[in-house]
Each structure stands twice: as structure tokens, then as C-alpha cells.
Amino acid sequence: MKAKVDINIGVRGQQGSVLFVSLVLLVAMTMIAVASAQVSTTQLRLVGNVQSTQLVEAAAQLGIEEVVGRLDAFTDPTQTITPGNLPTGINVTVSDRRCLNALPASGFSAAMKIAPEDTLWEVDVQANDSFTGAAAVVSQGIRVRMLAGSCV
Image (cartoon, rainbow, N blue to C red; front, side):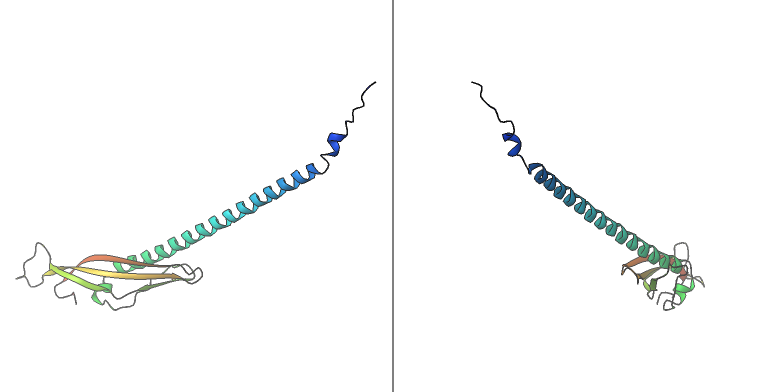
């Protein structure tokens, strides 16, 4: 007598398992895709913020350069100075210059009619981007040789 073997028993026990495994893998791949998109978005925002900050810092440095390039910025320290060629939406404010110290210039005698002094000035510049909200403040010390008594 021959024993009858049912080969369909193993297949019947696996019905639907391929569908279940496929769905689990699909959900896992979807979660990985969503996480990757979020990481990319975060990195893009980070790069944008760094770029905005660097733009504002460069605009503030342009304000410092404008002060350094003008002698009247120190003869009239309360004069309003506005740098040119700024990108749209960037506002730069140059504060009043402050003379911190004045020392007799080396190589000159106090008995001379015109005795220059080496003056040390502090300049503060604030820059703001009205679009991104980025802001920067740059402080710079500047040494200027001026006539005696110019540091007020």
C-alpha cells in the first residue's frame, strides 16, 4: 500500500504571507523615504540660514569699510554714514564713532605748531535683513592720525 502525500499542505499554510511581507517592506521603505526628505529639508534650511547670516555680516563689513574710507567720518563723528551698493532688503546702520584714546604721534615734538596724535576710534555697525530676519553687529577699532585735540 502506497502512502498518499499531500503536497499542497505547505502551500496552503503560506497563503497571504507574501502579501504581508510585501506590505511590511513597503511601509519600511516609505518611512525611510519620508525620513530622508525631512533630513534634506532641514539641511536646506540650515544652508539658507548660514547664507543669510554671511550676507548680513558682509553688509556690516561694507559699513566698516565705508567709515574707514572717509576722513570726515572722524572729524564729524556724529555724521550719518550710509554704505552704498547694498542688496535689496539689507539695512545697515553705522553708529556714531567714539574716540577711545589719543597719544602723541611718534617722531613729532609737542613744541611744534602742528603736533599730530594717533587716535583710536571704535565703530559699531548693525546690519539687518528684513526678508530673513538675519542680523549682525560688527565692532571695529580704527587708528587714525589726526591733528592734536581731534579726539573729543
